[in-house]
Length: 209
Image 1 (cartoon, rainbow, N blue to C red):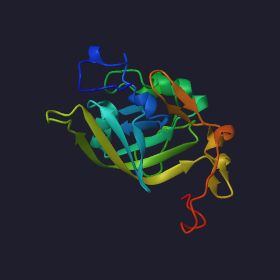
Image 2: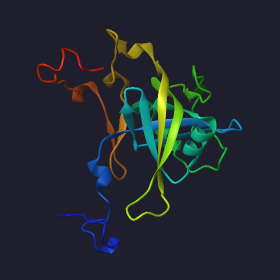
Image 3: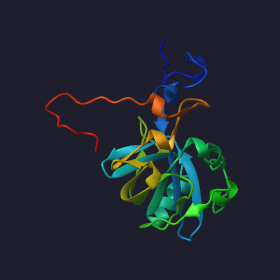
Image 4: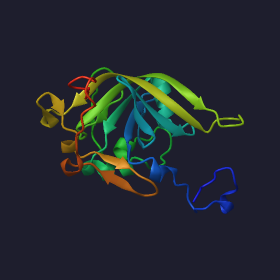
């Protein structure tokens, strides 16, 4: 089977684009940002990942508030979405008017960040404080106005709940992060699904930084 995006939708082999089900599970960037007027926005983005040792990026379909607020304030925070916070994360995706706080709508408390103005989700066990670097318009094949934008930030401070630090390393599985699949699917990371592999000899004894 081949799903061809160059043909009309009604001629494709499946009724829904399978890309999100194949590029999965994807980490969720739970982005909080503050506008120039001091209004808060909180929204989950599943097109999100680390792109360097100290940089992360999320992709916005359209110029949504998380993106524009990050640009206006030149800062944003990525809180970790977890199993316990799944309902609040989902509620914060509601399409609210600009300036209406998703924190309040989803009944989520804020906690102050250390180096940036936007707060983190207080109940989240980890958060990345970021300074906005640039927004890259993702121009499609053939040109034209872009519909998608890649927002890149540099991490300047990291919050981790000390309960999830063991022997100087963060225990990801203990935080029970959730990740996005295709359609309405999510995945839940636990210690039972964790496994380790070492790089081949010559790569160094520890390469997990």
